[in-house]
Figure 1 (cartoon, rainbow, N blue to C red):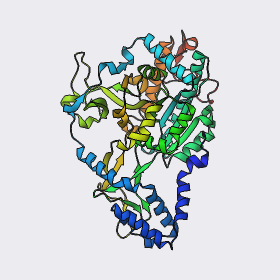
Figure 2: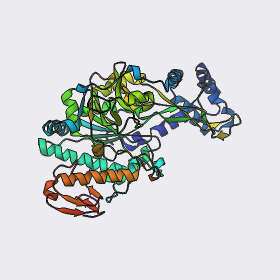
Figure 3: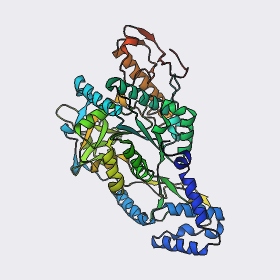
Figure 4: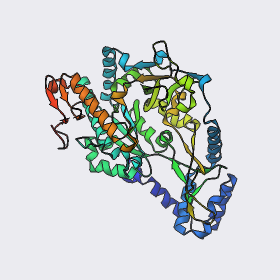
Length: 511
């Protein structure tokens, strides 16, 4: 994909493993002593305690795992993580301010003319090839009872389109809309962050589906990093006698991964100016939203967030706010009930800007983060039950938390922005998360499906059609966000289930 072939993109870890095997042999006592000395300097020599018991190949695996740790950073990471752990639960009320009125625009309270101007500006940048999408798609669908990458999940629409397919088709449609308006064809580059476990199946899925009609050269997969898991005293946990316990470094790992895997360089070579970043599991996502891009470009913002108005004071969602003069996402647990319930003179919540993992960055800003600020990102810590190897070499799963996992969050770069703005969008049009199985009754396949049906019914009725019933789906090839539907639906009556299908769609469902 792009200038990264399958081996380069998918088998990075395999290459490192081969190199590690070359680096050490069972007889290589000198190498063992050198490695032990290096580990002892940072208090991690216990990682070699099973060395005499493991095979040559297992030793190579262990060496590779250790080589992938940045030993100089390890103590620093743990120390910073411990500070973060101690800060958990501290209320920020006295240091908190809402986003100033001039820094946030509400779609619902902005004139159609102004929104249309932003849209035109965004489409112009797309037609010039200046826009990319940064998709966070490292997660598996485990909580959905699905053992593949979450982007491959079918929520049960009539079309049976997966999240990846829906988003790819929205990109294709947007490229066409940009060309229609500005008479110039530009491609939207699609950068997809996967994980160690999802990179190969994601790649294979895209190949099997011919990249959903996108140019393979304009789709680039890269891999999220990982961080070691620690005991409470700072010692790294062994997952097996020859493997270090690791966990994904969170969606904030995207910045280091982009630098290390050549994505920042690729952006520069392609002349990308603006990126829309979002997670894979929002079925209503307006991929590369031209209104958002146009607004941010006109405001000359280097970083921005889409937010939704909190549904009630106690909704368990982080809010975008200012802490000590800097923008950040404040978790609901960091605000007291009294502050959460504060309201403005118009009755709206003072701290109402709910974070939905939907962001804008300039390419220049991402270069600055990758090369300068990434190492300053906050570390978020969770106490977890982490499988470990006991002194007898037996792998155990503890009954209570025995260590910590460290994550970075994508939104923690807000504080480094020179100009930050926000756009409040209607929740029913732009946000429906897919996190849980249907048994949860919330943020699940049933709610995602119902939210899309409701929105598409609204599109048809806004264009002059009538829909009897609730099941309603419009192909992205027909309309990206409700535009250009009047000629198809005005004055017509539709009975559920409705599926407005394009000739490019697979033959599923109802016309």
